[in-house]
Image 1 (cartoon, rainbow, N blue to C red):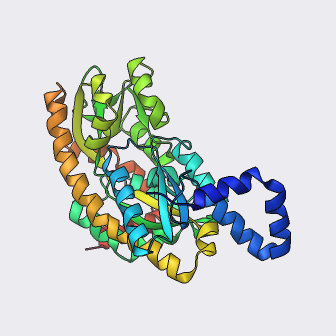
Image 2: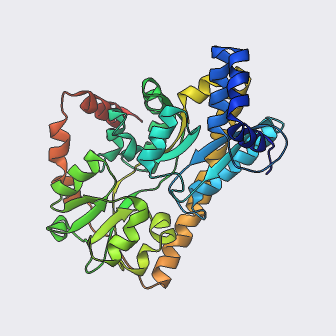
Image 3: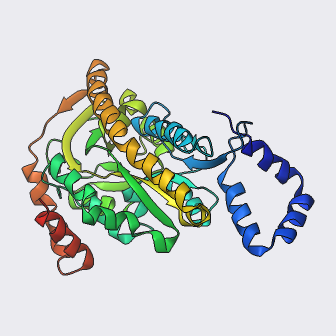
Length: 349
């Protein structure tokens, strides 16, 4: 897609004096909106004159999440008659997930995709999703996300400068290792396991007996290759598209957590949109979810087949010993706000 807004913003960046003069003429309020527009645009291609919203994530361009974002961009372009478009920057081009969240808070990025685990640093309620074996099954998980509690959590970051639009499927997370499989909690004893930069993820691995090691996603292949960690944990599409299977040949489907991805929107940029533009963005985001879930399901099946073909040994360990081992995590939060959220999840149909 092409959009002439980018060439205009580039011209204004080259013409600082003209931009300042224009801002003085228009007044402080209008200049603030103008800045939000410029800072949220910038694919660098001339086009139709609409507004480009920058969106960042750390995943590979072949990943189902990236494909859904491209779908969302096309839908928004059509829905708005070319007035709005999303420029997607994959593979951590604009920084790690935590960097993207901070840029969203500042209004330098309009949108970002992040794991709810990374969001814990900014919105403590998101730690809920890091609790292992919280959801009874996939149906229960999606019922919670689509229900009142799921909507509350999407809005819980507004005070920190960002609002969640939708959840994307990120499957369930399981351990993959280099030397030997994880078939019981005892197999994790002393193992250095890469985790998301999430206190809950670190607490979980520690409770299971492992040594949690937070490493940015883009640096993990090298960390596995050089033996800085003994393994990691993630879903099948991410394990496959990252090519970590070239180093880690054991995949144990303990399915300890279901940690959704979330599409964030900058509150600063959101407030610069008209009500109609806000509705277009929200509708396009919501419309992208069924597509993302469909592609996710297809690529998950394909990834599992490809992993086996690549020589990865896939295991299905008994989950009950893992569940029993992590129960102290739940006891720790009894009577706390997080514990109350747990009770709401468990009571949810």
